[in-house]
Length: 431
Image 1: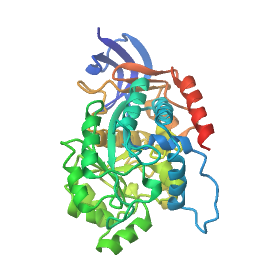
Image 2: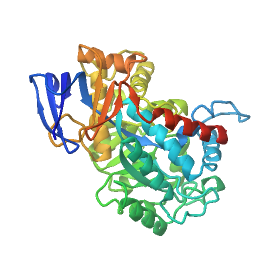
Image 3: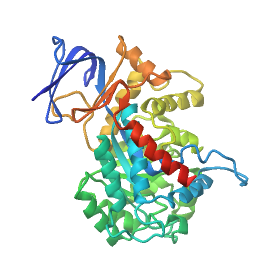
Image 4: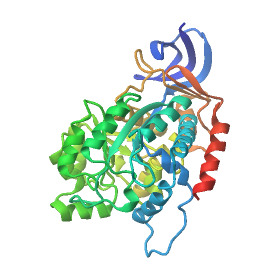
């Protein structure tokens, strides 16, 4: 039976429209009619659900646990990474599933309807493969199924500790695969999830492995960390005489199916190259701020961008968009930087909806044949409602549908309380 959702205002591919009736059948939008008579379930404002282009759900367990200055002269990404390794080595499969379940619920409550899970925690704490090589991937998929979020699983190929094929460190032992093992992992993951591939970074893969892993994508999305840190740029220059994005563009078939995560320190020529190839840049403003990565100059970047929650220090569509805009304002000492004209929040949402959908290989639109992934907001004027959502605390999503199933009602997911209780047990143990 068809499902009818009526919105007084809705964001269509052509812009805001009034009195929009969305018909859903078998998880897809079958029809969209503007200027329609009210019918079915009625709401104020509707828009497509956002796709989260980059997440490491297991890191949700350490949110708030690394905000201490240690004895190092400089506290930065690299010192944080050592703490992350220490926490990650303690988690068993039940822990991974419990943490992912809460993270996915928080994403849904925040207005994310899909997620690209950049999953590199593969093995047992001692580094040995589980009997099922995809044991931890199955736990991510189980968490997605229980919560209802659309999952793109990105098994990560990770083999080295640095440029030039450096041997991995003990702290990376749960991540490491050779190409044969990765192929088996990918084949197994394909049996229970929609998958892409993720060569972790130019630090963690050799050029030969990068080519091999990209060739395993079978036309699906390919995601990679690149140019997140100035130290990474310096090490890449010392290794090959080229900057990271420069090397990647020259040695990999980067195109519209690629998502380059961060690209924070890509220079103008590199950014122009990404635009020319049609790839998406996956920005993670909250994590990039938390880790002191730097600011991507999004204000004058014409290519595709999406947003991701990365380390999941705080899971929020609004907070990621707010940090994106505010970082540009702080850099340029100007206001409403990301709007070419008109409403800033609407411009931010429209642009990142498109980039996020491209990065996950899906569609984010209130249009026929698109997944019925929809978010409702309260309010009268849609531009003001979106501005309140992005820039004003406490103005969250009201209801969230994924594939036509209502997963969030009145701002809350039905499994939120039980998932939080299980998560708290994990958090208490790994501190």
